[in-house]
Length: 254
Image 1 (cartoon, rainbow, N blue to C red):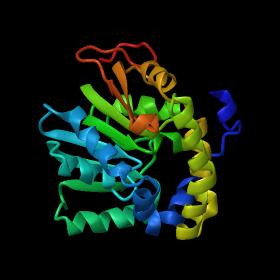
Image 2 (image 1 turned 120 degrees about the vertical axis):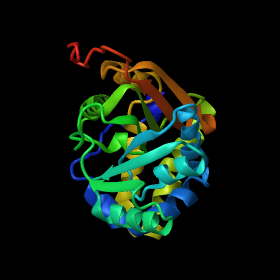
Image 3 (image 1 turned 135 degrees about the vertical axis):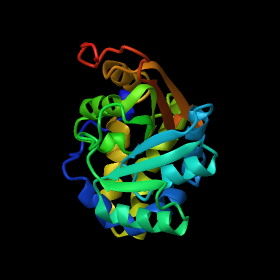
């Protein structure tokens, strides 16, 4: 697989500035560039919350709030959702959606960093993050922060692009990501850099078992990965242990 991958990691420093620039066309381009697959992927996340009631949800890198809205539309029993993002322009769009859907009071939106979540330990029943984990500067720090703010038995759900294992599918996927997607993204958004960044981060970010390993290192158990649409995206699931758990550093939580 290595011969297909780019070798350089793009910088994630202040990546929120890029999302501020592309915010007005972000939702439209998500639908176009994914051929609307992102809608079904986001709704699929709700199946991992089935049987969980009165869920207090944290949605990281919430952007325009799509992941929260698709969970609610799919029937997830979410009583309170807190969306966190570093891009004020994306949050401004999310706030308009919240108001338009009559969800003020049920959905709260905050400016904040996934590597320093402004919430008490054990606050949330579930945490979601869609197409955002690859954008943080320190993945391990963000995963440990998610672990910290979940209640015992809480669940982390992370949706992210991945590189298909099938050689034929992988070749088509990478051709599209390298040579088609950046041009469409640049033409519609006016920001070619943003969609070159998407391609580079999608290719270089750990996926499959490699990412599952990062979840386990952060302290999660019952870790699983569900590839979607031939493996071009994956939902990762990890649970915080019940009862007297061990922290990611191996120390008892009291």
